[in-house]
Amino acid sequence: MKIAALNALAAACLTMAAGPVFAAAYGSAIFGNVHVTLIDLDPNDGIAASISFLPGDKYYDGAEIAGTAASGPLGSKQPGASYELFDLSAAWRSNSPHATAQTSLASVSASVTGSGSGIGFSQGSLSGSALSSAQLGASFYGDAKLPGNKKSEFVLSANTQVIFSIDAALSARTTIGRSADGLTGEAVSAQMSLYASGWGADGYTLLEDQQDRLASVAWTAGGAADSWSGAMSVSYSNLSTESSDGSFWAEAQISGNSITTAVPEPSTYGMLLGGLALLAGVARRRRNPAV
Image 1 (cartoon, one colour):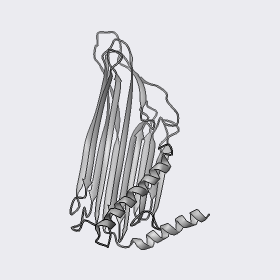
Image 2 (tube, one colour; image 1 turned 90 degrees about the vertical axis):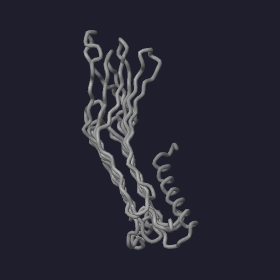
Image 3 (cartoon, rainbow, N blue to C red; image 1 turned 90 degrees about the horizontal axis):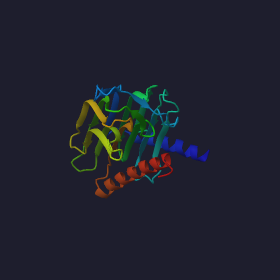
């Protein structure tokens, strides 16, 4: 009860102390339109192009989403620092996890629509915001792993190429960027990654294909925006005369922070950066006890 009361008091203090917003950072990642395309590399071998996905751990096949929202005054050890987090795994491939974490100045949301296909998802989104006011800053972090164990195993027929593709849209935006005195600023990024791999014809060489896309704004004076949208694809070609094992995964991530101080001292600016980093680090360690 004491811990709950202290958390409530801290949140209330942050809300009352927040005041006017001086800087804000926003990030998002949206993906969908998932396709699996097979190409028969030798139509005369009598083997039809096919792919089959192997059953995996039921707790991770669909997706895993995680997020942290943190806010607080100068230095995370001062009263009023707070954070919220979530970490959800789809129990079955058809599950669609979604969650939101929010503090007085930061929020992050994640959502994935599951499917019964071997890939295990059809679309998803991440969004986050971090605001700052007088001597208060905030940060957010969001992640979606697809599938949750970051590996969807499959068996691909001989002389066959498989292409995994999705449509994605990434955005990053800041409002102030960085003030002339360097004591107010924001940074934000959004990233999407695809990966496919499989064994070479010799049975020993691992063939890997990865594609990454990024939208990022970091401490740009006057604020700025960056975005990317389009199709992403990775592939694996089984050039052997036997079926071969392979794996596929996709991951989206967003992160951002907004900091400000009414006291024009560089040491204070550094304290705020360190405090928010420490606060986010504590939250991630609590989400991943093994780390």
